[in-house]
Image 1 (cartoon, each protein chain N blue to C red):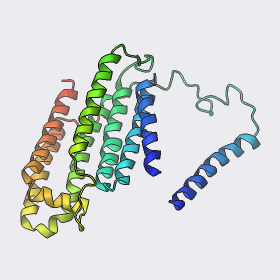
Image 2: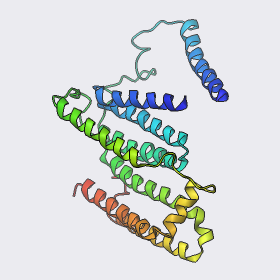
Image 3: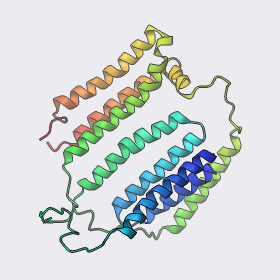
Image 4: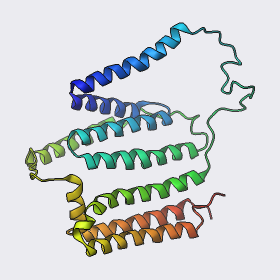
Length: 157
Length: 114
């Protein structure tokens, strides 16, 4: 029941994102779509992923997208072209994607096996601190590169 | 589940009901002046769509980076005590690399408002 509510919300808002003419309204419905995905994560008992989705995508990425829209001068006058003449390639791409998704679903043992004392947040932290400590530090380096690159690109001089 | 539905229904009734009551019971005599954006004598000059300062975007970019950092720190901090000194050193390296980024942003003046 909750799943279907979230799924319908997600699909409807995703359709509105690609069909609305005003780009600002598209961005607002993208927020609704991301909220629905976060709800799905919580519903599927992945609370950490849900929190990440809320904090990073809605808290940071969407703010950045809205700023980018509002930074662009006179974007509100233009209406987006939402119809495409590339419908046959798009259909092919969708079919390939569905086939690949079905194939990978087929290879996944469901329902996933979860240990008795599994705690998503603590086990993730333990893995990051022991087995995956090098990728963890590389993430920090990657964030540094992103920050320096963003500043270098965004500054005028 | 039943609790959720009860909350949902009461919430919807509350919002829709209060707006509907305001719509039906309050008098409507709109004039041009009343419909203006600022109802205190200020006439707006242009539309509300203005171009924002690029500084907001820079700060937003820096915010994204440190947001991701905070998310990564949370699960590690929770288990740090049980793993001892080595975890502390790992976290210190992680934060040190990002402090370098913050220092760079500061040095380049990305945090200043011009």
